[in-house]
Amino acid sequence: MRGEPSRRLTGPNLLADETAAVLEVRFEAGDDPAALIAAWGAAARALHAALGRPAPVLLERRYTVAGGAGATLGFAAPRDLLYAMTEVNDWALAEAARRGGGAPPGEALASAAARCAALIAAEANPALIALAAEAARRGVALLQDDDEVTLGLGCHARSWPARALPAPAAVEWAARRAIPLALVTGTNGKTTTTRLLARITAAAGWVTGCASTEAIVVAGEVVERGDWTGPGAARRVLRDPRVEAAVLETARGGILRRGVAVDRCDVAVVTNIAEDHLDDWGVGDLATMARAKLVLARLVRPGGALVLNADDPVTVAHAPADRPTVWFSLAPAGALIRAHLGRGGAAALLEDEVLVLARGAAREPVIAAAEVPVAFGGAARFNIANALAATAAAAALGLPPAVIAAGLRALHPTRDENPARVNLYEVGGAHLVTDFAHNPHALGALLPFARRAFPGGRLIAVLGQAGDRSDEALGRLARSCVAGGVERVVLRPIPIYLRGRQLGEVEG
Image 1 (cartoon, one colour):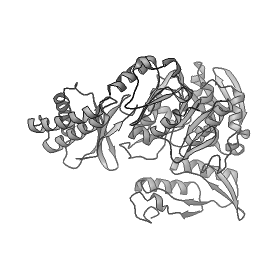
Image 2 (tube, rainbow, N blue to C red):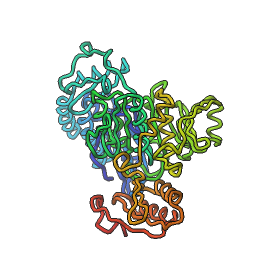
Image 3 (cartoon, rainbow, N blue to C red):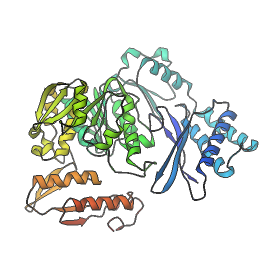
Image 4 (cartoon, helix red, strand yellow):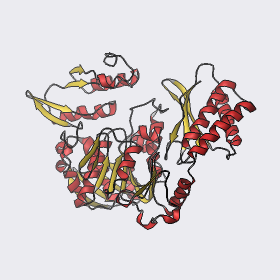
């Protein structure tokens, strides 16, 4: 058995809605996973008891990935003791590996308890627990990291140093309110959907904070460039006193590594679920990937909306039945859409090349697909789908069609406004399309677009990939390139993304 160091889950996550300490374990030949997990659990319970703490709520998820069988093991932990609880978890796993089943020896248990008790005493923050309990009672958002604690969101937020917190009675609770908040995830299209929705909320007159794989942007100004799709990005946007509405791209990596920064949102969008980043963090199949991305569904407040892609079979298969769902679709005559509208449900649809909002039998036109710049006159069907997702989310936020249309018109497929998402150039008489398409699902959408947009020419692909994909994933990407009718492939090394491989290995 090989274990990785325990980590903190600081918000809702794949295993639970609460904060937790978890670790990853890979089993080796000859291991008895059930016995080792039972021994870990016994050791964790014994150390909690020795510390005078309640028995832990154990969290366990077994999985199979390309590297073999593994498990995520952990337990719920108070938000003010997460570092100390990771030490408890590490000790429990080490004890299970060392001794197997049975109670840990008294001397080892006493030593571990003394060490962890000192960590707990140093980390404990009763003021934080009291503030969090009152915030939960009042339905007020609380953001927390090592340095700051924030109540309320955006322009209604106030922050304090984590070690200088007010008593609950001293907080102006009425002023600590929420703002319109949308979370966007999916395998492909989430950055474009995030940007479209941010343009719409800005068209509504709201000062919008947006986080994506490219940058944090507030009021149209770049705050910082980089891949900002995790909980740190969310906290940064939601603490900005200018922000009146927030649209946050929320990537699978952040959900799995740390959890989500917030426990409530108005709208959650899942663009699609396809093969990418499989075998990371114990996600070895699409069903588990779907559960990870649909963590956001659990965060939608009463009266909010979950926006899902009716044309994506994986999303449809794993859609939660107990959440208010707004579907979007390029195929409005599909059985799912017909049944959903027949029950009086809401959807965003493409009908006769017009984006419409539908509820039951009613239709409200929003904008012609040809008027959406990123749709390229309707040739980029995947961006029409992204526009429908943004339309559905905006309508769920209460925005009218005229505002939605203005926002959709405001995003252009340029390097400045939507970099690496279908940017077009003309070079030496050839049409050049650059896109972030880095998995078979994305490439399978991009290549037909190129054929539709520029019929009759040779299709040449310049293709590269990061080294942290498995050989199988690289093979699937190559096959999707061939299946798309590419007539010549130029393999492009990406030295800054070798990620453990040798130069030339990915291309091979």
